[in-house]
Amino acid sequence: MVSHKSQNLKKGDFLYKQGDIGERFYFVVSGSLEVIVKSEGSDDFKYSKTLDQSTYFGLKSNPLEPRGDNARVTSEGACEIIEFHSQTYIDIVSKTQLSTCE
Image 1: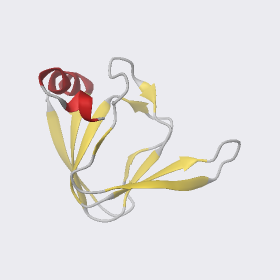
Image 2 (image 1 turned 45 degrees about the vertical axis):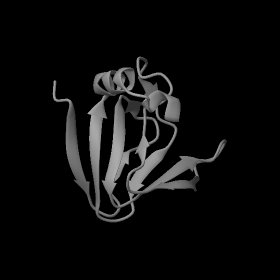
Image 3 (image 1 turned 180 degrees about the vertical axis):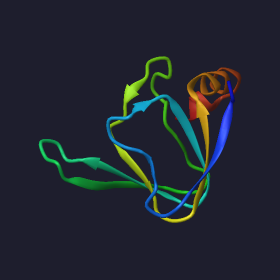
């Protein structure tokens, strides 16, 4: 298994969409991503937050159980991310203090 991979996104590219199975952990190397969520009881999406350079996200709660993501993440422009599989995330957290920073 490859432990990580780098991705280069263009403006408007989806990293993942609401409902996708979350089995990845991400680190933003450069650029920024927009997170939007579906309004409860509606098909409308609303802005939630921006993920900028050096931000990490995904798989913070329970990486052992894949979950349906509740947000849609889109690149705001040129963006580079590093994507880690869940097992790599578990290995990193078990060897560092990352879990105490969440």
